[in-house]
Length: 254
Ligand SMILES: [Zn+2]
Image 1 (cartoon, rainbow, N blue to C red):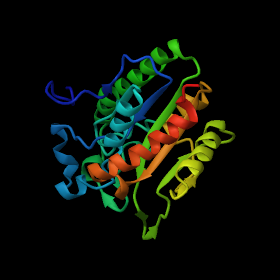
Image 2 (spheres, helix red, strand yellow; image 1 turned 90 degrees about the horizontal axis):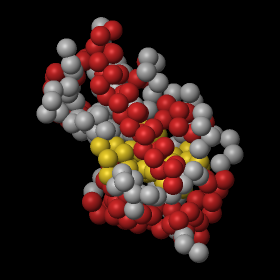
Image 3 (cartoon, rainbow, N blue to C red; image 1 turned 180 degrees about the vertical axis):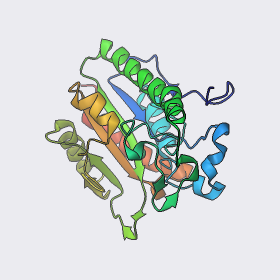
Image 4 (cartoon, helix red, strand yellow; image 1 turned 180 degrees about the horizontal axis):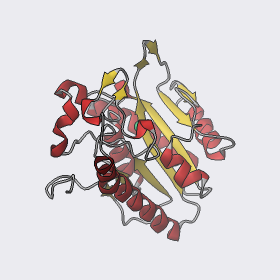
């Protein structure tokens, strides 16, 4: 029995995938689609519009950057409540039973076959396509940069998060230094969190681990605060800021 019906979205969506570019955009938490067979996971529509279901604004921001910088992009349109494509399969966070205090009835007491269906029809096909996209881009630029785009909630457990943008990494990352220096020059007014609102360390971040630590690729994990990209004006504003910094730091033609 398949989980996804033929008319439902593919486990990945691509944009500009045939461009020869110096970077690839990866948007793991782009969407909040739930397969029909899962009956909204037992949640109401309101819960499914919240940050627990997806990274608000991240798909639109990735879109903006892909178009403005002519970069290939890949998105997962399935909600991270179905299966989180940025968590290692099998760990508790992969298919969360509770997320930011909201219980997810449709994720409790799952049979092994139900878990495997989510892995085999969403998680693995998405990551196989991400791998292909990166390898295809590396044929033209072996040193290409991976840009992971996420967004974070303005408050978590009551604590406000003042940063407007954050970069996450582990160890030494010269691209982070380069980005931060250019951002300070061009946009000194932006509150840029360095390894804030959380740090890049933790084996649970599947994509970062899989595509960069194992293969030693260059990367930036960019986090933008959700309230700043929840409208199209906001996306445009933050998109332009990010795009100008990325251009100056990495894509300037000399
Ligand atoms: Zn995310």
